Each structure stands twice: as C-alpha cells, then as structure tokens.
Image (tube, rainbow, N blue to C red; front, side, top):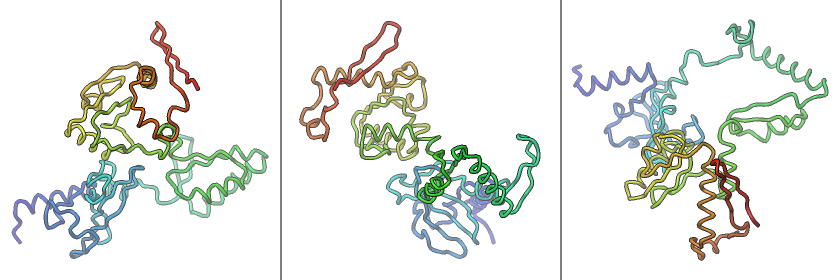
Length: 313
C-alpha cells in the first residue's frame, strides 16, 4: 500500500509516541480539528476514552487513545469547560509514566546501606507482616504518636482517620501538607467560599498580582494562564509585584520589583490608603456579609525598609 507524505509523517509521530509518550491524536481522527467526534467509540481496535488527568489537582479533562488495551496518547478534551482542550506536559507524558520500566509494581526491601540502592523483591504477605511488626513495636512502646502516616492524594480520608485514631497517633500528613495547604488556607480566609482561586480573569479589566507565578507554576496551570491572556487580549491591564523578572512579570503590563516577603505589606498599605481616603464603593462593601467589621488596616514603615502592620477593630 502506497503511503502519502502526511500518512508517513503521522506514522513516524506514532512511533515517537510509543517511545516517548507523545500524543498523536490528529493521526487517529477523521479531522485534525474535530477531536471528540468519536470519543468513547471504537474504530477498528482504537478507542477514544474521556477521562480526567490526575497528574495534579487541576484535574483537566483528557481523552485517552487506546489500542488493543494499550494507552497510546493523552490529549486535552475541548469539552472540559475548565481546561478547554489544553493539557500540561506532565499529563501528555502519562503513557511514559504508565509504561516506565522502573515503575514499582511489587514490594521491594532494602538489603544494603541506606542510599546504597540495594533492594530485593519480596511478596505482599512479607511486606504486610513487616509493616505490622513495626507498628506493633511502636504501639507497645507507649508512644503511638511516633508512627507518622504520609499519604498522597488518596480520597479515602475517613477510613484512614479511623485507623489512625484507633492506633492513637495524630501524626497524619498528606500531599497537600507539602504543597498547597498554606495557599488554600489564605484563600479560604480572604475569599471565604472556596480554597480554589480560579478567578474570572478573562472578564477582568484590572488585575493586581502579588507574587503569583500564573505563567509558570500556578496550581490552576493552563486554565489560569489561558484566562489571564484572554483578559489581556480584551484590554485588561495586569500589574505584577514580584521579586524577579519572571515570565509572569514579563507578560504583565507593569512590573514592580519588590523585596522578598513585602508583597503582603504593599497590599496592606494600598488597602489602608483606599480605606482612609474613602476610595472604596460604599454600596458594594455594605452588601457584603461582614463589610468593614474588622476595622481598617494600618501600616507603619521604618527607615530601614522594614514594616509592621496591625488591624484595628
């Protein structure tokens, strides 16, 4: 069978995808534009299966291309209202993660010095028995709190909490404790309704950005960056307060190079001026549940560049 130039290039892309985990969705659909025309349906031995990417907590909608039970590629699902067909590099690399030859598929026990890289394979029963013996010894010592439980993004928190309470340890940690807990707590304290800050940037007219790397490392990733740039295309002005000329600062209309750790003080100072000079919209504030019940924020600046702040009730 004679191959056209386009078919030859697509075949080469498919080979690269099998080796490197790159997506080849266009080569397996009727049209390079219509990605979801037969999502979930079968053509020959190829399937399009809508799913969600779990490489991070953004959980973008994706379409997995599967042939003969093997994952070929992961691409964004245009029908996802959040990511709108985009997916980050880590999501696209899903096949590489799934078929990584060094992926752990069974228990391994260290048999050499720590850091020596010497391991042997053991059975699941051996692994469970060894874990149970360690737990039994800690419990018998009278210090159950010395057992710390670390989990990833497992959603089975109820059964884990019951197990840890029964064991007698409060030392429970998860992925969020090492990742986004502080940011989520701050958002929940200021916004109040959610700990997720996917703002309506594309319909904003003026965006003040304090140290948020939305073009590089925002937890919302592509959805946030896309909405921010759409807002800019519609005339929004983006002003960034950042300690370095990052990609985010470079994409902003204005960039103010600030000292590390002073972002919050600058925001407080701006709030103090707005409040003390009556520059706020009274009708808008009064409609909010708490209004100004916590009083005005004051900022005291010192000659050495440092500052302290306090809230008056």
